[in-house]
Length: 319
Image (tube, rainbow, N blue to C red):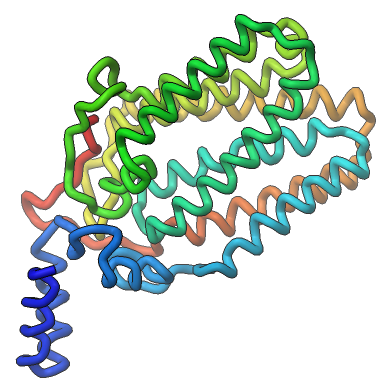
């Protein structure tokens, strides 16, 4: 609170133009966030519709939720018309991973909006998975592994806190913090390890594995890709240009993304071929997917980035 009060006093004693210049200079000099916590009034005000550097967010605010709602409705309608639930499952299961990559890499969307979008799309993904996993007789070993994996994920999220769970350091500039509470005292990256265990555990169920193995493998591969991203990819944050990622990190990340995309598309194609889905309907749904991907990209990636000053670099959070 004292930091904010001192800043307000400075503003009262300076001409308006000089205030703007001073704020711009301070932003360029410092790689640290200009707010103390997400609960501060200034942070809340900025998180509503602006990037971390003050630019207006494309398709921002509560109205931006219209896009995922419409997209989900169209996918469900298309699956209903085709008589093929797999179309809805595959088309709605992986969007939160796309958000994670864009938010982590660019840090260009307000943290509150990213958290809202990620929670909504991950919830849809888990509902889609649950709808097909629970359609088969339960395998209790599979259920135990799935439950254990998601419990590990939940414990890790509790230890991190809501803001840091959704890349608060990388995307919003929260101070770097070493987490030592359970389960971080036992294992690194427990959230992603828990997810990999949970989604992999679904494959223990023979009935689910027979029909839906591409769905589970895509989730496993995408979580592995996020782990590689956190270990090897430097986020672009607050107008900073870090060194480009190494060839190894690009290769591993690209490989995991292609593998998961191939598994998802292969599974969807197999289901579509057996169901005899009309080509026109498939084309319309494909166009909707492409348009939605572009809308997300426009929201989550800034048009330009500044050039880093010497010694002004960003790094991934080490947990």
